[in-house]
Image (cartoon, rainbow, N blue to C red; front, side):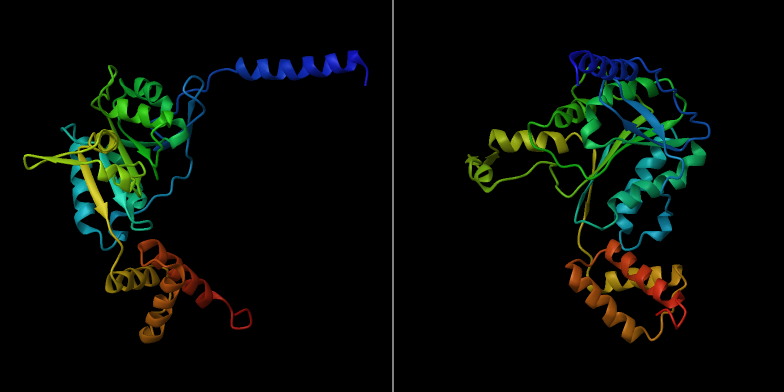
Length: 292
């Protein structure tokens, strides 16, 4: 390939990049018909993309988490009605309904003006731009940050911390942040850090590293913890989903043992495990005998 060909190839590639940069800005979603969006792109060029078919659940479908459900539902109802409400952190064991609960709130209150925007950890630096675009909207917005876990050096960690409390722009009255995490303080905790905690005159003084980690989760006004299901709770959820999917519940003694073996293989008794087992059973039941 000649030098001229190489030059032309480079020029074409450069023009393609320039076209991307000069592409027209994405239009804002029509919030009168759009219930949910996700934020994509970096802080400077990011934009909202409508989620055409959001994964909607009903609150009554979420079992064995009644205290957590009641607390987040009340907080969200206050928010939708224009009353003071808190940012919420839902933390705890995997598969126990944290994310599902937030998604179910959209289905419950969308008709009253609630909307949701999913913001992934990699895009948290865009929070100031997201918030500014929503400030004058009449709807109520939950910024949904799912499965968060940070290192202290992550840029998204500082962006979230500033958005919750400590920045000049602040969150307007029509925006709340609901986050889920397997970690109570969203950051890894190490034994050596707890060993640095001191006791002076009967008072506990946490090490600076521990204080820094607590300072993020402490900015959430509402904490809800989710723990692994007991055996009977797990089986109750199994029965619910089997009935929901139209699968037979008899003989229950056999299904019960199969459900427990299913959970044992996965090392988890949770709502998610129960849902997967029920789907497997419903699918098998619907197969023709010759296909089973």
